[in-house]
Length: 153
Ligand SMILES: [Zn+2]
Ligand SMILES: [Zn+2]
Image 1 (cartoon, rainbow, N blue to C red):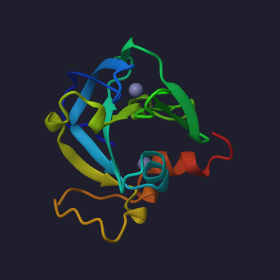
Image 2: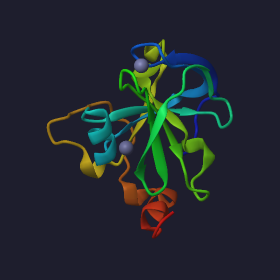
Image 3: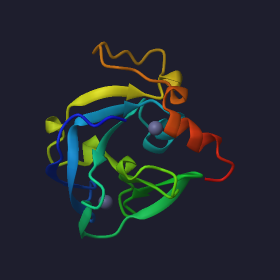
Image 4: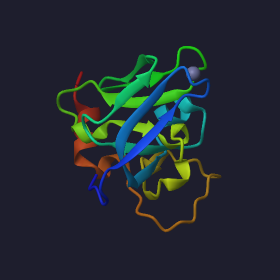
């Protein structure tokens, strides 16, 4: 994924506020992920992800629990209210910039600007977003496709 904008300071947290974070995020590189894992784990037709600058994420309150959702990544959530919080790579082969968080957890989600759709091969047929943004299938992204093909990341 080619980053367009520069990282900006953001704050956010889970629904019950047991967990709060601050980070620098590439708000202008926000993307819709239509993969089945995002659909399942978030319960939404697509998760809207915000890319976090490597090393900038800092928890200011609480500690999420993590659940391994693929052989190369795990996702954090609040153990009290269940809000989905972070996606982070557990594979040394995955690029660092893939650390991301769901847009709805930001204090100001309206500042995020979607720039693309990814994993559109599993986009739900009734979920129509007529925004003209670039759309890629998993196999169009060589780094992502290679991770999925790796036997155990
Ligand atoms: Zn919570
Ligand atoms: Zn996804």
